[in-house]
Length: 141
Image 1 (tube, rainbow, N blue to C red):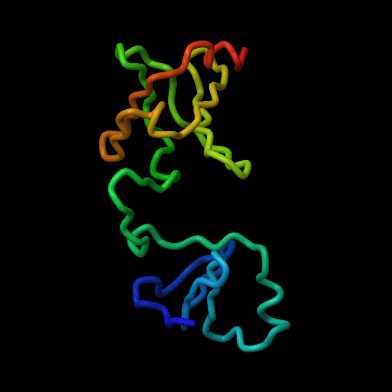
Image 2 (cartoon, rainbow, N blue to C red; image 1 turned 90 degrees about the horizontal axis):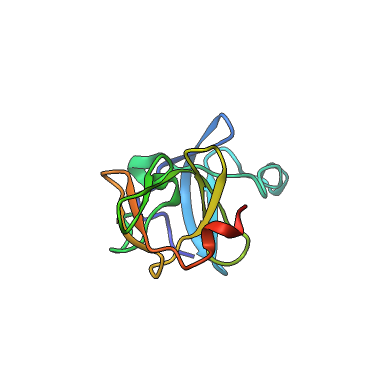
């Protein structure tokens, strides 16, 4: 068990803020020790809830990796520059993440978020250039 490296100081669960005393990874799962949550019964109330970390406390990612939340609102274009829509959300169903792209006509297009398809990801410019496999657009119709 390693102590919190100092980067994550506070998190939110719902509308409540919690001060982080310690943080470690156990079997690929993040484990938090919050100030004031000192018993198992107190901790059990928080099990399975979403923990959000303020953006400024997020860990830097290696080049080519992205926080999916940073892609919300990104314009999606194909290699010719044709607009395919805007990323509204994503799905993670145990495999590769799927970007939920709202097309200009209001339909939804699901695009696998892979290096083979998402050729250029510009987080700052909020733009993703994709090379869609033949027939992918038709799958959503």
